[in-house]
Each structure stands twice: as structure tokens, then as C-alpha cells.
Image 1 (cartoon, rainbow, N blue to C red):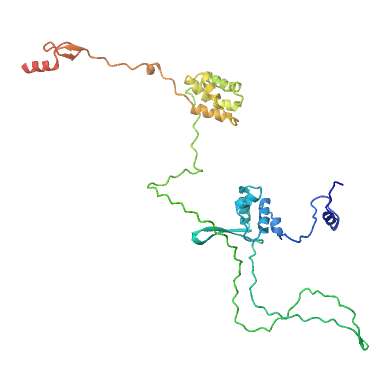
Image 2: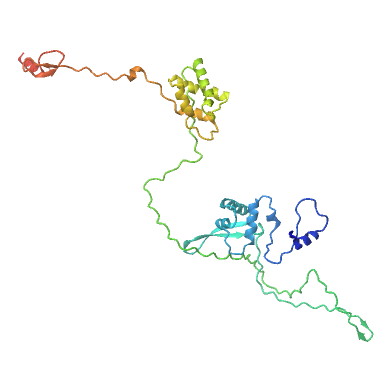
Length: 358
């Protein structure tokens, strides 16, 4: 007793002509009496439109004139986001179902006028308004058989429904050749003007030229080459490859292949040539690893190239600078004035007097 049965659906399925297909969809056709929209199969079964675009097109076609069909309005109505709805509107516009134009309103305002065409490619033809004379149809009187002096009525004759009822045309009158009237397109429903918003005051123009940002397609800087030692001795090669292969013991993410170890060996050898210890190299390569690490060989190559230390300075470069020798003071033999000289004697003034006397 708890199972519900739809009687109308049961009758509709029972009325399907012919054998019922074993699979696929079955159509239970129940005629609509109100609130329905006629949609062409060229839209419902469009081969190039997405399912979201078809649904948006059917929804817009079912709305009355003057309804809002903006992106934000449709996004508030349906669970799809603004990105999907905007893409669907662009698809409908590309295939001729939707036409969006910018029109200028009063007070210099600009609004978007949206027109939806249920049959793209066919211009809407409006019948011209003319006074056509109406000629009453001639009633058809059924023939009544006459038997003797009495007239017998055999009953109402069956009603005949002709395929095309022809109305007699009026007598043609010679008129000047008519000029074809332009096709009348229904005027769109006026959109209420938005509330006036105070226009922002334009900023004063800068006296300098605008800053030009680099293009997204600008060429990238070439990658710096991996450092190499002056002489890659067998000892340096063996120590470098062993250090690289041992990194996975200290960091599980740094698992290198044999090809990666062979490629990065000259970079580690350049560090060892500059007197960098193995502990310092290992700490530099394993510290602060990103999670997750997708390309360990690229990360190690970058660190070996960018963080390469300079060579250690020599002992002469670390020695303190030598000071220049200081000249001692001497006392003048004549005037007892102090002056600097390596040998005792006279000061400058006394020597000048002796030269003048001589």
C-alpha cells in the first residue's frame, strides 16, 4: 500500500505504439495545457553547443520580454557559476541565438540590449498592417432529395472540412507599383534607467610617460650554466658522485637517478674545489625542501649554481696591511727646533740661512 503509482504516466506508457524498445529512453507524452514553450530541435539537439549553453538558451526562450538575463542574474538563479554561464552565453552568441548590442540612453548612459532569436539565420518577418476587405463566405446548402409532392429532410449533412478555404479576391484596381515596405522588427522593451551615480573626477595627467609593464610573452632569461671545476680529477668525481648518491639518506625526497648524478657531479666538484666541506654542501642541498618536491634534480642544479661560494682567500690576503715606516724627530743644532729626519742636523729655516750666507 506504500507504493505510489502515477496513473497518467501508466496510461501514457501503455499508449506507446509499436513494440517497446529494450533499452534507451521512453517518451511519456502528456500534452501541455498551460505554461509551455516551443523549442526547436536545432537548439535542443545542437551538435556544437554544450549542455549548459542549450539549457541557458531554453531558459531564456521561456522568459517573458523584459526579463533580466545578465550573467549575475542567471548565476543567482542556477547553481552554475558566472564563468560557465558567461561561456554558455558566448556560445549562443557565436551560433546566432543571442545578440547583445550596446545602446546609448538619455543622459549619456550606455546599456546592453539583449535579443534572443529562436531560429538563427531567419529574419523575423512581421506582417504589414493593411485594411483587407472581408468578403463573407457563401454558405453551402446541402441538396435535399424530392420524393413526390413532399419534401423529406434526411437530417443534418456531414460537415466537410476543406484543406484550404478560398476567399474570393476583390476586383483588382490599377495602382502605382507598390514600394516594398521595410520589415518591421518589434521594438525591445525599454530597460529602466539605472540610478545616476556621480562620475569620478579624473585624476590629473602625469607629466611623465606611463609605465610600460613587460609582456607576458617576453623571452625568459637564459638559465645559468652549472659550475665546473678547473680540473675534474678522478678523486673529485668519486667524492662528488658519492655525496649526491648519499643525499637520500638525509632527505627521502632527494632520490636521484644515475643520469642525474652524472649530470650534477661537476657542480659538486666545483664546490669541493673551493674548499667547501661535505657537511656544508649536504646542508645546503637538503635544507628547507619544498613539499611536495616534483623535480629534485632541478632543485639541486639551481642550488649548486646560485649558491656557489667564492674561493677561499689566501694567507697573504688575510694578513693585516703593513703600516708605512715613521720618520723620527730630530733637534736643530742652531735653534733647537724639532723636525723630522733620519739624520741629525739643521731644520729647513737654518739650512736656508746658511745657504744665503754662503
